[in-house]
Image (cartoon, rainbow, N blue to C red):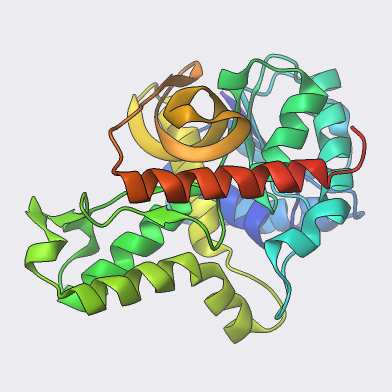
Length: 308
């Protein structure tokens, strides 16, 4: 199994780090156009192999022909958010970057499964889908897995319990219109509505929606990278190991939830073939309205994209 990661910035390096720690691939390749950057990051990671017990091969390169024979390619390349910048502000500059990456993937790794992390994710995964021409089950955006992790942590923090015992689901766009489902969130099977008052739940939902921005404002010169990297590798691991995991991912909807033609975060089954099934669960009227508002926001982003 070969895992390729395009972009040796903070998120790309985090992906490589977690892939090494979890030992999910025999070969991990880190790519970047900046001379020496990917090679330096990969060498540093490789030297930690004896401590983690990783016996595979990890290296960095500027040569994109080495994408050949990749099972999974992760795109993290792009400009990061800075304070005061929305994901939408990144749209046009990152669209060109993702387009360039997708062209290289199409050329050198035409049979790979593609996971897009670059922001704004729901628009960037659309760009990658259009440029590669890959089947929809092989082009996936990482968003819901990260948003759900944040949601679970905030619930656990509020209750003083282990995050491992919290189950929750975030759907929709990766942005302010995301949909953290409250009626399905539970702790060891106990609904959070039995454990937290409505005001606290509302506070957690709002913090989840702006979780990325909170970190951007604190860091001032970058954005989140540790959890985004791990959330991405959780998806890659499910594919490599054919685990049939149910995760929230940004995928192309073609009528599900009454939405067509956009990538949006919904629960899916991930396995060896990529997205093996989109799960269409029953949503209440208000939840469905929020999901559709997110879909409309995605359409607006797509319309604002430069010609592909």
